[in-house]
Image (tube, rainbow, N blue to C red; front, side):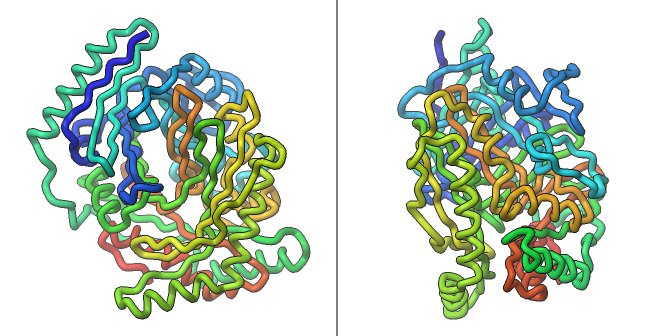
Length: 459
């Protein structure tokens, strides 16, 4: 089995993706914040050999109805091709890519989903890709890759990728768009309503139901017929560069994400999660910005939020990792992004022999940082208090490689768009000493960059 790989002259991944931006099942997994650590690689995935999508327990595998639970179907799709990676190339060289929506959690636990679903987006959309364009944004190198699966002519597919990239180079994108065809925005909570929801969570905490729950509000922006989805993604990554960004085009709808948070990475039989909990806004004035970052690092409340989720993730990873191997090499480290400071921890573990990526998803999805602790009770309270389902928000976007590697984000700072509207959410972890007014303000701080990408100003 051969593996055609051609190194090409480096091209900005956003420019390179332009020929496929309006093509269904085309995906850009994009490290738009390049730092050599979390943000290094970008991947273009086009022309999937297989697809899995569905809604409300009705699944389509390669466009045909399929029975079973979605995690098993994903596992079966991946089992069709297991290939090693070549050394010296970026880590994803083909496999499954796409998203799992937050409500996929109900297929793992008994969670009701009573919220309104006015977008009717799929619960998941994963494609199996044997054509990849991979970018190392630190060394500024790039490759086109066509895996030889099922006797297909890999070289012919490689040639088509070259031709599309030549077209992208010949027609460079203009500057980042500044204005979009939109018609205002609304929120699904009033300020009083959001603060009441926070107070209800505090009541549940004091009653002994749980320690923490993440409550989010949803914002809706009306879209006009000339709204440019990919142009919007380009604007989003310009104002809020993040290591786990993505643009996913799926025909009638698209997802644009600028997430700073890794959910789980699998490589070399090791698992790594990087939960975010604890936030302060950035300031344009350097002295105030430093004061805000210092305030965050010494905040007992924010550190407590983070530690609770670290403990939850340690428990989740212990389901699939060797006894005694789960560790926390980094606890409550400060990381600063375009609009906010965050506290970020790292949880690692050694996978048990025979553990597959879908086993890890079953053990840990959805991420604890966007549910709360204990997870199931927190998810029940989220379903009770939030007026709409979450959809892609707080689900996960990323890849599972043919070799069993995986890298998935937590889909925060994420916008879902159909032909009429765009939605995005922002929220935070509520603990016993949370102040409802402060939590409302924190949710707006987190949404600030998303409003800015639309050219809007939050209240």
